[in-house]
Amino acid sequence: MTRILFFSLISVLFLSCNSKDALFEIEMFTDFQISLGLNTLEAHYFVDTNTPATLSGQLQNLNIDPSEVSQVVANGATLRPKFGGEIDLDFINSVNVFLVDPVDLNRRTEIFFMDFVKFGTKDEIQLFSSISNVTELLLKNNLRIETRLEFRQFPPQTFEVIIDMGFSVFVEE
Image 1: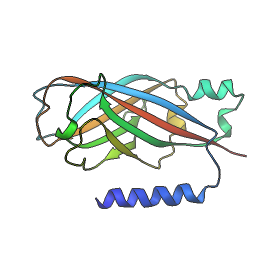
Image 2: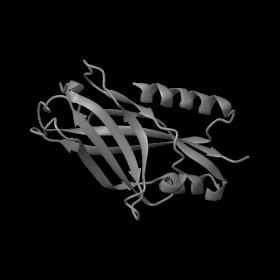
Image 3: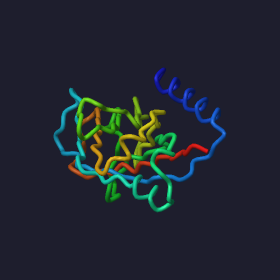
C-alpha cells in the first residue's frame, strides 16, 4: 500500500510540474492465456515476445525526428478478459507489467502495476502507471512485454486476457 501511495504522489508531482501536454498518445495491447490449475504459491510470468512498436512510424508520419522526443511515459492500462463473458478476476492478487529490451533481457522496466487488487474485482483491473521514461525501448521495432501475476485463489477456468496500454509522447520545444 505504501508503494502505491508513493508512486501516486510522485506521479502527481511529476505530471503537475510539467506544463507541457503530450503531443500524442500511443495505444498498445498484449494478450495471453491464463490456464486452469495455476497455483497460488508462486508468481506466474506471461511473455509476449513480438509486440509491434508503433512509435517510430507515428513519429515518421508527423515528420518528427526521434531525437526530438523528450520522453514517453505510461499513462494507463486495463487488464480484462479478452472475450468478455462471466469471468470473475477476483482470484488475481497482484499484477506487474514490464517492458524488456529484446537484446538485453536483463534490462527490464516496470510500466504498470497493481500491488494488491481489491477483493470483489469482477470485469477489469485498472493498473497504476510507473513514471519511467521508456522512449528508447518504444523506438525499437518489436517489444518484449512480460506480465507477472500472483493469485490469491486458483483461476476458475482457462481463458484469455488482454491488457490495453496507453503511453504519452512528449517532445522538446
